Length: 89
Image: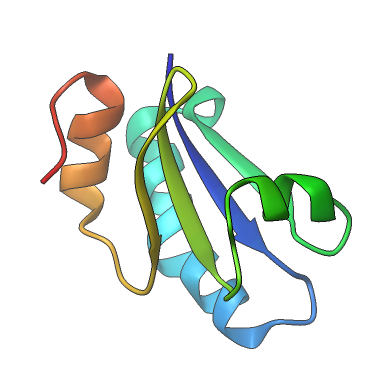
């Protein structure tokens, strides 16, 4: 199953902005089952597993395989298409 992991922290203002502008619209398009929010403070092992060193960050997974690891703006349409089965650039 394809999934987006959203790494954030509650004290992080850019994380709250990112969630509002990118993650919540993506959830509306693709469904909550395809997006997992991960509090980087509460899940340090998961954060380390995906080499997250800046917040906010996303990781796109196709099964267990990492297809993208990124900080910064995302193209919501492109990510939604990936979650539905298309390849990501």
